[in-house]
Length: 375
Image 1 (cartoon, rainbow, N blue to C red):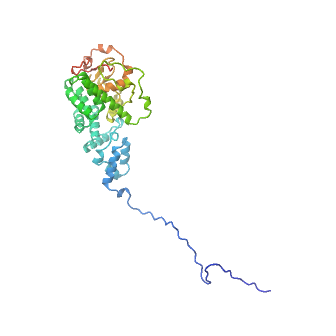
Image 2: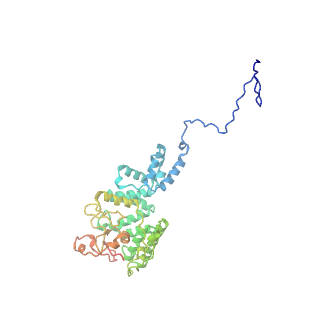
Image 3: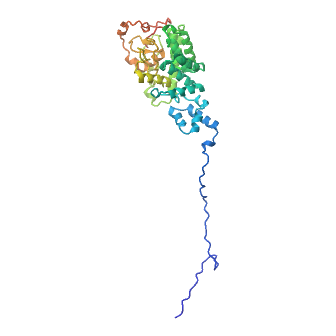
């Protein structure tokens, strides 16, 4: 039997006997991921001035305090840069809208720090809180005056209301001419309530020579600005509040300018300023609708101002139930609520309390505190 013969397999390709075949390695096009190194954070590489500029933009567009507070809680560096005076001076009114039920010494210090940084909104807000809530009349009026000097319209109007009512003092401390001057300055800046207040003062001759036609012009301008503000705010479903009236407006015999609601333009209530919302919530939390000691709140829900002495505010001359710190508040509340509720009541005239609220305004500028019926 012949021995089996082993045959050597010949492989195609380059092959050299006696040498090991090399493994063919295909190079990968994806480079391996680099190892993670513990280096500086990307935020640390951004210059401080650029971060401050970003925080200024964020603070000026904040829609609530949480938008700004969340930045303070992010990291130590952002907290330090967010307290930069340049950032604090540009905070929006909603960013410093502290809540009455959350009021604390820390909130007070934060607003004071914003005031020191030059924030006009903080000056006005803290001034209103100190004047009406904390009863620090002098300091509160000084803060509002600081904002008013820089042409802050709400501060100018609030000082006008204080002058009209003699708030913080006696009845003899009223200064109607100063109130009209402050109101005129705020109206020049486009403040709707100031325009409406000035129009009624001109029509009634209250603190200024009577000029009915000029007063009507200011009232029409206030209504136009009120409507323009709503149209520019982008409120949906405008057909529900902007429509032609089915019933003709009540004739006013030239006594006052009709509101837009008289013509079917049921314009929504303007957004309440954070300072006024704080006042309303402050007294609602602590004493309901009465700030104490027989004092009353302004019946307009968006105002929140309390009396600083008894019978300081003007009372409705028809029902005697509601009272207002200004004619502007009366006009707004008449449109929103009181127009449907007002009914003649003679009982309040028989109370004989001897206060300021029992004399009707007859256009003689004597400063007495009963409002005429809205037309």
